[in-house]
Image (cartoon, rainbow, N blue to C red):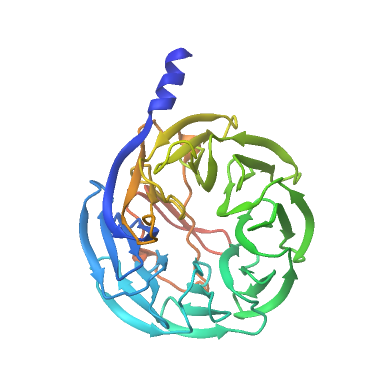
Length: 412
């Protein structure tokens, strides 16, 4: 047992740090070409090789870009930039193949790709609307304005009923039918809602708030708040993730702890303490672990990543990143089992500094029970199964008709 514990701790380590420029605000993974896209807010997207962590290319001229969405059905990247544009980028060549005029895309709003009907949604924080892009034709379908509240900032997909939940800074959640691309419900929530995650097993949406110590749980069947949980401290922006294997929700707080909620009972089942302020929480389904970035006030100019074992709920390691600014969502490279952490920070005068992408590598073996499933949905059901583009890390594929008949089975 002693040697097993040592192996578990040191299986994960800080593998590399890539200097990428000022304000890397988002990282997105392309599983087909095995590359990473790093959004640099000033003017570009940096391309990183998923095998050797080297910068191989860059896409320039995308000023004030801030939101990335990857479409695995057509191997394209969608990037909001400038004041009113979305760039469509070929995943194989890294070339901009189209520019779509949209609403005011500036601000902190996030994007979401819906594979059910091949659409991309952009929350336009400054213009109080949501842009909908057709992923097949790369064209603007609609700008949703009616029913969108003030300051839309975050989106999540309820897969079982094909609805998009949009959290609005003004104090509500807009429920969008992805079939109709219109708001079908507006749910009033506590002030300053900011973060959100979805529980597929129990069909619930969790809403966290900045400057407010509550988490509201929405039942997606009736779009009603079924309970409100007081977590004892303000929620950190984007500090929420769902452990789909153990059915738990992890929430970082403005204090020095992470709250764990049981997805079935809606009860707080654990509080995990850190030596500092936790920010981002991220679940890795490959190793069933949760990654938490936090800053220790007694160690200046440095961030850490605490690692929690999802099975036991115990903090098993802490890795120093030697840089501040780990405030943006993490990204997983499942082929290499790497977690990418963007840093964006400024000097004492508020000037953006050259930042890095920190890469945590897990060398422990992944058991068969930890297999990450990859579901592809086509609606309407009219396609040739011989021409489906799949990520190269998928080894087995089975395609069924709606009747349940197996029409294709392949092992790579």
